[in-house]
Image 1 (cartoon, rainbow, N blue to C red):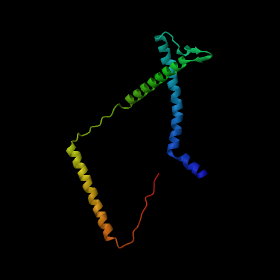
Image 2 (image 1 turned 90 degrees about the horizontal axis):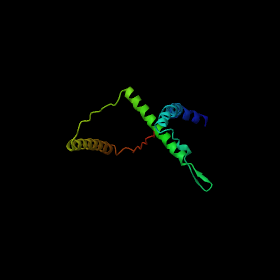
Image 3 (image 1 turned 180 degrees about the vertical axis):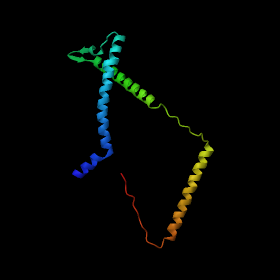
Image 4 (image 1 turned 120 degrees about the horizontal axis):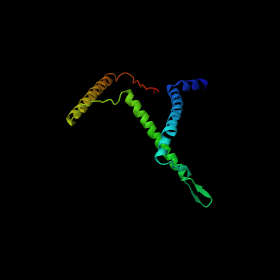
Length: 149
C-alpha cells in the first residue's frame, strides 16, 4: 500500500495540481487586493458610496438580506473583469495572437483524400488476409494489447 501511495504522489498530475492550488491561492490574494483596494474605491466614488450589503427585506421575523447577494455578484463580476484584464495583458506581453493559415479545400479534394485512405486500408487488409490464408495450416496465435496508462 505504501508503494502505491508513493507512486500516486509521484505522478506528474498530482504535483501539477498541488502547484496549481498553491499558485491559485496566491493569485487569488492578488486579485482580491486589486478589486478591494483599487477598483472598489473608484466604483464607490462613481456611484456615490452606495453599499448594497445594507439592503434587506423583513418578512415577519425573517430578514432577507438580498443586498449581500447583490454585493457578492458585483464582487464576482469585478473579480472576473480583473482576471480577464490580467490575462489579456499577459497574452499581449507574451506575444499576442498566433495566426495559422489553412489551405482552403474543395469537396473534390476532400473526397479524393478519403478515397486514397480507403484504398490504402483496403490494400493493407488484403495483404493481411493473404498472410492469414498462407499461414492457415499453422496454429492460431491470439495477442492481446495491454492498456498503457
